[in-house]
Figure 1 (tube, rainbow, N blue to C red):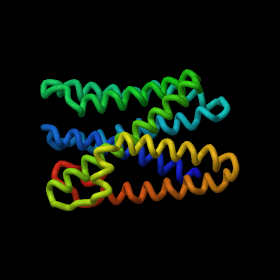
Figure 2: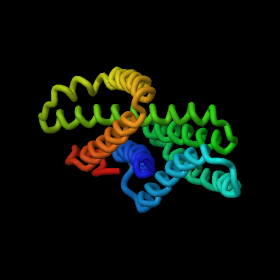
Figure 3: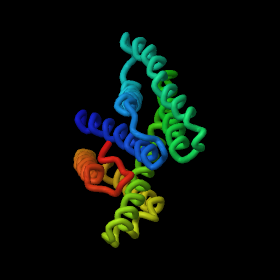
Length: 223
């Protein structure tokens, strides 16, 4: 479970940054020497918030004082990312800016909830971050499938049907997952946990295949 949590945390951070890179490359931004620094700072902040969220379940101790101080230091990263984005507003406030600000607002809010010991808000924002992740994943897959079909003529009937209906797909997934959780977690919790871990690693595998596969121009080679 610890391995799954670590892998899932990296998966979240890498996907968010990968999608932000897509926005940048589709725009007029050219590759700069700050890309590598942006990559690690962007992901490091998201990872910090995810691990900080996990620490909220632990009993308060001496380390909590140091983490509370680290919270303030970590805010320098989203501050730098947003300020750099605002400098490019002369090119227009597009999807890239909206995506970055909405994503960082969510994670800064989550960090604030952990910092101020608000478990009810932490749970709500953690759920929101999961929905954010799932919805953008389906959206980017739909976009990728359409671009690939347009550029190469490849057709996948099932994916082409699902892609423009990612909202309905996400809702169906949530209903099936919720029903399965209600039934299996009550009667066979060990089996439900095993199914979750297996499906999670299958998801990571498919995700890696998608990001590393050959793709049309404009899509990064991987997070």
